[in-house]
Amino acid sequence: MDALDLAANLRGYGWDWSKGLHIPRETRPLTRIRFVACAVLSAGLHAFIRGTLHRAVQSFSPDAFGTLQGGSIFDETLPFFIRYFRSTIISTFCAFAIYCILQLGYDQCIIPAVLILRQDPVQWPPAFDAPWFSTSLGDFWGRRWHQWIPAVACLWPRGAASFASAVFHHMALATLNGEVELWRMLVPFGMMSVGVLGERMFLWLMGRKVGGDGLGVDDDLVDPVGGGMFGCSSIIDGATPVRVLVERSVMAFDVWLHKFIIMEDTMLLLDLGLAVHDLVVL
Image (cartoon, rainbow, N blue to C red; front, top):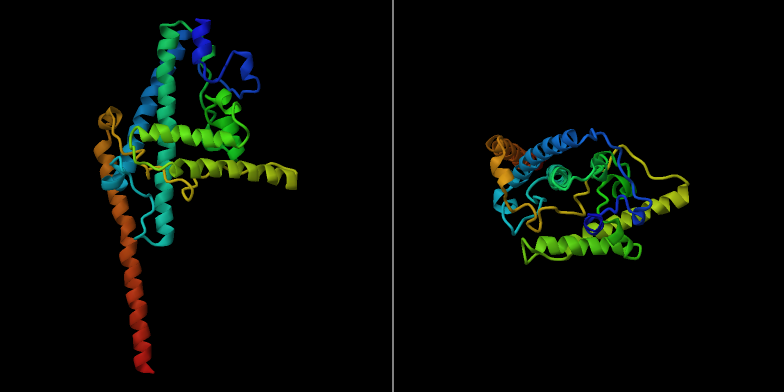
């Protein structure tokens, strides 16, 4: 059993090669039955949220986001601020959907490991540390996001870990869409390294760490549905009880956003009419 744990333990929790690993504070009961019950409830909750958010993202543009070819979150027909307001909503939904599917997979591993393999609940600490409360990129990647592959990251020189992660995610996405370009992963993950280096430079110059109220979603650097990542469907989406309500609500919201195009065109016509009127008067 120890050999299996060593081979499958991504974080190295309980082994000496995981020295310095951040482990989130445990809040679940550590008795075996209650621990598994929490995992079951967590899996059900995150499956529901993931299905709802996935369907919401696809409903913004079913012909693009609902296919493996994907599409851009940036609607060029919308005014500047409305365009980025819409893309930020989509990016936020995508971020939380990714978190939910990862947490769901972790919960599904806990159940047989504790019930069947009789592992101690202590061997399954929380996977995440409230990543939505991150105050910097360093805080996000170093503490609050999952630390499942620290050993793999340590095998790469500093700065190259982001490249390795980009290639890994590209290979995973290529199984869905073989025509997806590598740059769709290289750019966002590469910019993460640039951001972390910028934070270290800030610390060196200012003598204090970067801090804030929370980590924002930078949809300028990453287009999460561009490669068809959210184009696939699953049984979770179809089983979501509020599927129809989500689809109708999101589509109605998107139609409302596109009304700003008509308003903008109307204002332009009014301005043009006033300009012509002034010329006639003169």
